[in-house]
Length: 99
Image (cartoon, one colour):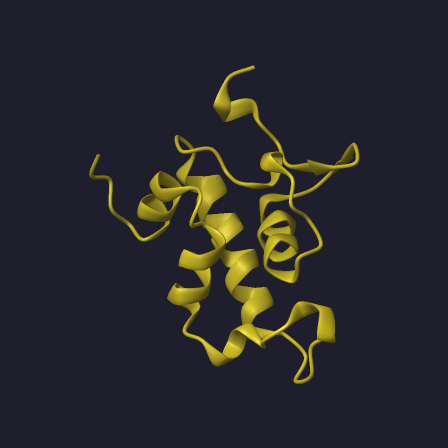
């Protein structure tokens, strides 16, 4: 399977890239398939839209298990924390194609 054919899924349930990005921020998903491929800028954009949308739409009082309210931090900082183990994806999400 090439990277361009990779689709996000959780427990065999297919997701859109938007749903995957939202689920990653919400902590609902932590599956490697829920991070967009490096060679697919369209999937990256949809994932980032879901992630940012979830960040903007969090309830004022998140559940205690979520810890600190991520909205208290800038979106870029939250994104960097979530993608700390995926530095190339983070670079691409920030618009840099440097290697």
